[in-house]
Length: 97
Length: 385
Image 1 (cartoon, each protein chain N blue to C red):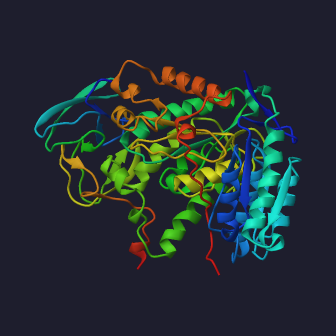
Image 2 (cartoon, rainbow over the protein chains, first blue to last red):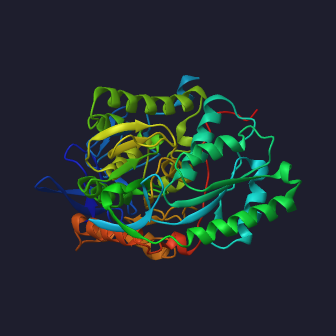
Image 3 (cartoon, helix red, strand yellow):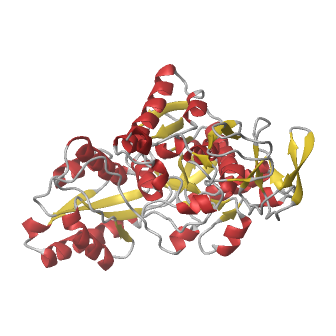
């Protein structure tokens, strides 16, 4: 694993940074056998995620091949994906009020 | 594979030879600590519980105290009670006695106060420790080992390196005929459907889904967003955005073995193989549950780094984050960050951890043991009345 980003599962629409990435940097990662390049827009610190495709508000964010939450705003390819633009759908007692 | 440990009266093997001082309640905890301080080779397990508890909450505390006393790493137990508390000393003493190991009790109100109880307790302990010190390690099969798998202070590397590599170690132990367990039900939320497919029966699958639902309903019935605590601020800083993402990374540490059964907090497994125990995501309470269930050793993955140990079992700390390993070198035993940095395969790193586990079973001290990290807490499921 010497790449700067990891796509955990072929179905994922986000990748995890394996090194600090500068804003505006082209980052390459493997999806199956294929290498794909993404222009990462924001600075991404080690371990954080960026979008591999556009994700519309209300759509699922997929990592490990499974939904990890819903986009709370339109996310563009290369955007930082984190608590500011995705929300958990589980354990949400606050939504039942 | 053969390893070396202490054979107990019930046929199980311990990899440590602790004499413990076990208070039945918060009221006898301080006295228990003072008794333990007087006698070398002992450790006290002070806690805040044992009185004014009812129903399932009471039963769980009793089950946990008895399970800890019965744990094969424990050679002998001194139970310290106040006398009037809800959890009566006889209940704990008799529960532990079923294992055949030496158990005695000191009751503060019967002794006539702190000083007399300390005197009597120290006298009992002195004999217990001397007797325990005669025990010699003997050969036993690694199939008799029960491993508790824990993760805490997760970050994005946990799901990429730390947990997958420990999952591999768990598979290796199961393959060798041993037992392993996953816990932390909160951190199965969002990943339970994947684990449920590995259950040996529909009944086990349903029970797994039921404990996850029960945990999720707790936060929903409180009207709160579980994100107030899960993921934690540290998890979020480490790149984990939601409980689903945390859970999906967490379950890698469960390897690939079939799930034989679902255990209540502190319950002993009925057979060998892989189990899931219903515990909270809080590390210390989770580890206590697995030790009460009979685990002799804990492997603990961490992304952010944590000092956690246990009074009765070695805790081997593994991180998938090389920067954390270097920063928290006091506390972390193995760096699995090499898998991400490159040059070391997951299988090679799993072999390294497995070998370390065997050495620790045979007596090598972990960093948590060397620094006397005796973190201890019991999970409550009710109010104090």
